[in-house]
Length: 186
Ligand SMILES: CC(=O)SCCNC(=O)CCNC(=O)[C@H](O)C(C)(C)COP(=O)(O)OP(=O)(O)OC[C@H]1O[C@@H](n2cnc3c(N)ncnc32)[C@H](O)[C@@H]1OP(=O)(O)O
Image (cartoon, rainbow, N blue to C red; front, side, top):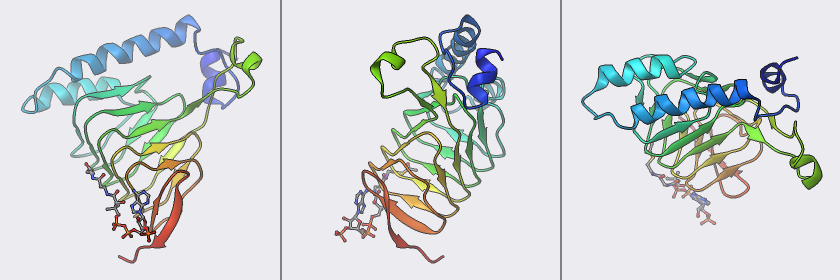
């Protein structure tokens, strides 16, 4: 298996393989271009995002600056709004559903490393798990979503939360670690 195949299979892999570094360099060039665009330059933004992202739906609005590692593994549905300074480490697929509101300084991290220091400093010490965010979800400012987390439809995650475990649909959850605070009826 190549390092890319291992990464996408959720196995330990070496993220400094030249092929992976080249893919990340490509993403950096594209988001650097994107981050220099003006709000009125919608066609230029759309062209860059078409090259950068895995897929996206209608009416996407990403406010610069925006950062990601590959872009290729980011899949956005319709009517997604991403506010300033979002960081997405898409070493595994990251899916965001329809009508998402992503607050400022939100970070979605699919990438992780071992806690054992000797393993961490060896080659092959990277691992990634997908993140899935349902439809109509609001992640308030400064939320961090950890690898492998799924957040259900219609849920709100309060500002500053660190989401380490799955959160169900139709709730307000917050805190570090993020816990369900209450159900939210529509
Ligand atoms: C798309 C964009 O650009 S978003 C723009 C930026 N705006 C934001 O980031 C919004 C910031 N506000 C929040 O995140 C808030 O958490 C909200 C609005 C989601 C919810 O706030 P509230 O309606 O006040 O929550 P609610 O009254 O249900 O609070 C219930 C409990 O949860 C606690 N709580 C509320 N928010 C949080 C939070 N972010 N972190 C930890 N605990 C929280 C409350 O203190 C309360 O605890 P208590 O009962 O012990 O007093």
